[in-house]
Image (cartoon, rainbow, N blue to C red; front, top):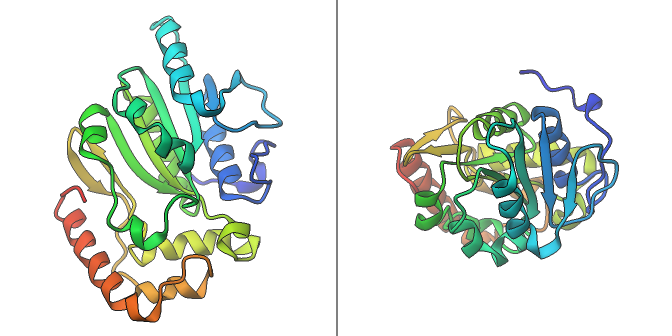
Length: 247
């Protein structure tokens, strides 16, 4: 589907109206109907059922999901940052309820070269009906994954890259370009996992050199002495994904 970013609902995330998290939430609200939203952050401008649950977002969402009539077509969605997500991984791993969890990941608790060696844990893969990576720079891919996840029974998890202009040090108008470069270099590959099968959803004709990422933002600039190592690691991970293997 074609996404018109100018027509998205007016909602503001705690990171501000120009944050990647705000765009990620707007796209979610555009893509899904009949949503009960549970967030770790307070949100403004919502006209849907919403619970600000702070650090208890996962537990609250699980309770809501258990209380719903299974015949009612409602999607319980958790929208939480990577910090909150990291603190409650055990609750995620143990979740079996019909919940869609979106991690609005601005890399605040990580860094891009560390992310290369990190993927979904084996426990999360084993316990989830659907997992995927996405980014706000590729809205069609993200929305397609949201719809697929919402239609899949069980616990679903989407790791959404949300570049932050203030935190990553780039102009807000360049947000889409920053996300695009993260994907095109392979630093943030777009893929999904269904029943243990890995599928790349975006396949550049060739990966761009990782040092191009240094040109579009400053926060996660790869040091000159580390570029070769990061490039080799990126290439290895890309090969695994193209072979259908989990990182």
